[in-house]
Image (cartoon, rainbow, N blue to C red):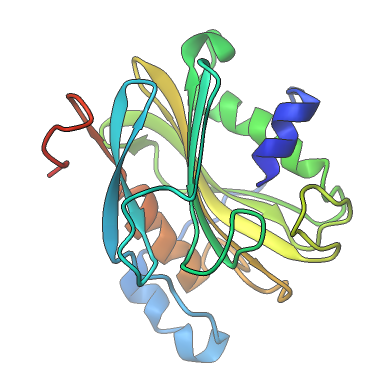
Length: 230
């Protein structure tokens, strides 16, 4: 939900230089599950969404079968869809899947990393002393250039949207994909009072989101009624 606040404030460019931690996949990370107490997400289903003429298949963790987004917005240059678990809202949630598409002229000539840094600056404003921005492995998604990062707040200091409490943790695995038609930003985030959630790039939950969500994104050709992505 930080991006709604970003849209109101406008974009400010910032270059963030942070350490890169490499993680080795779900199998190795599963060994630490019992000790860490972290539950790695399982992406159970895929839903088809249409953003600015691009059809995407988006992984969800939620137990309930869900075909329609919980939130949709489109102003002609940006499109947004968001999904939350059953019984939650896009303002009060524990897990969130968000996918946004930006027209190319929103960030003229930018690369995926530059777009990620612009988006990260908006989140930084919510938590300047507990800001998280750590690059994750991978330079492509579905064959397109991409950048991925662990991004968010360990403890929000400034109220951003209704439902987000001061001091609450909101951290997610974000990716920006550079396609010929648009920039696509997608993230799987968790919100909790436990600031250890999504603790580091080697956290099993982060690795599972990287492999299950980011690498599970698919781009499909055709109209909204075309066959689902394979």
